Length: 386
Ligand SMILES: *Cc1c(COP(=O)(O)O)cnc(C)c1O
Image (cartoon, rainbow, N blue to C red; front, side):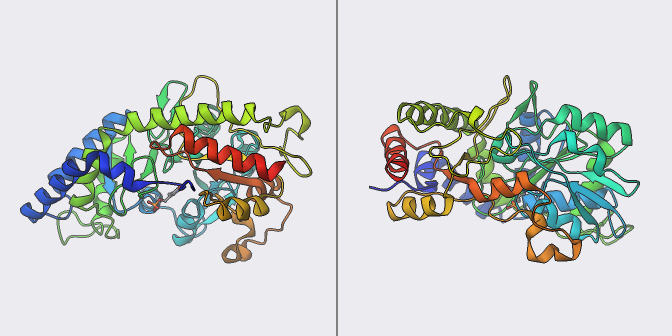
């Protein structure tokens, strides 16, 4: 039968009339850039993540870029990121002329390893970007503590983590800036590109708003150089409707994750972690899968459900031949990307990231996925591994 990785049409069907009406209202208003719908969304997202200020921008990538610009980051500066994330996390600092400094991830969470952070800090370090990958919070307490001790701002990359909680607080509200993406495949996805920056600091919020419109304040008077990083009214209108169902979708994703845990366990496919090297969780030579780790007490929003497997690329081909959606986030760590050869890194420098990049695979977890479909996914995994 086949199972897609994501089924946006199923989601649209549940809110079709409301979304269509919201888009038509914007068309009737002919007010397309920023405006009341964007203001509403900014207030709603600020309230949702528990941050007093929110600034709508053109994408999650631009959210990171504008936050870095607000910190005045440029040539000669260093920005710390994990080597295992979506490209924008490292691409944005480089676009501003800064050098990305990679800090290894934890194998169990796929997120920046706080134990490796302090050694990477130099007098040139101007920002730290922890990523909340797959919807699970990075271990922010030690990261924020180290950053504060060195006076370095933390820019949270929450693109995959809207509503994720760390020790009872929503991510994005803990660092100096929280960056979110409304790319259609994120938990809260628009009808195109969009993003949001949240901050607890009013002055930073004003700076972000000015940078969003070419640095103009007032209009046509420029003390700084910004860009066109504005959010469209149509995106905001759609997102204002979709935000009402976000918590419901998140619960369904969490329920689907619980179902996968049960089904994979019943199929005898779950590897005992004690069999693995605890530093890398390397699955080489082993049958089965590792399940995603959840930090106790935190809220994982399951933007992705990511397994570790041996023979990952063969499994991908097999699943794809059965019509089962899957994806690899991400196959090449930053230190091994062609565009970063100038940084002078070598394979073997970040082995935890390299193992993750070669063994991780995401399977369908979207809210509308049903148990029959999950059984089909697990049956295909079992068949491949038998
Ligand atoms: C999606 C994503 C981004 C970029 O967001 P866009 O809206 O696609 O520009 C940045 N970081 C991470 C971790 C992401 O997953």
